[in-house]
Length: 148
Image (cartoon, rainbow, N blue to C red; front, top):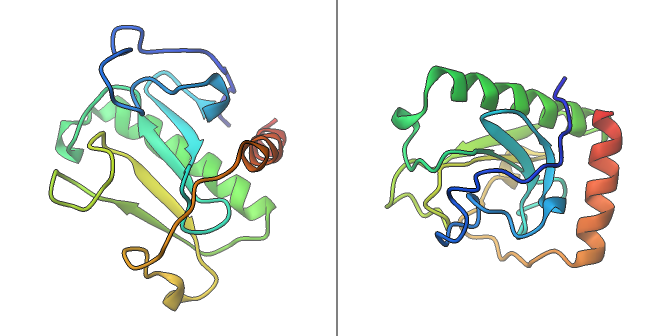
């Protein structure tokens, strides 16, 4: 299980404009390890849409180190634990690789998107809204408690 650290990181990346390199608030992090962190999607496709993000700024899967891949896998397991606790057994893991992959942030990230039926997966056509601070705080409290 991931140790929940809630620390700031990547001081060398701060101020470079990437929202995944420098989260705006510490409360954006659900769990982290040395090479990656687990967070929520600010504009989710469904409830409990989670993201696993490498801490180092990379755009392509091929740029990840073996340690970063292991760290990401470990956090995907934490996301799975959260979803199972919320009685969500089915989800998609989507990684959009490269600049032309329709991802909104060029920093590589893994989307863990809950789904109840296969036809739920139509994310490119879905309208999304940004979570309110109240929704974020509720989600963080629930997810962090599951990982304790």
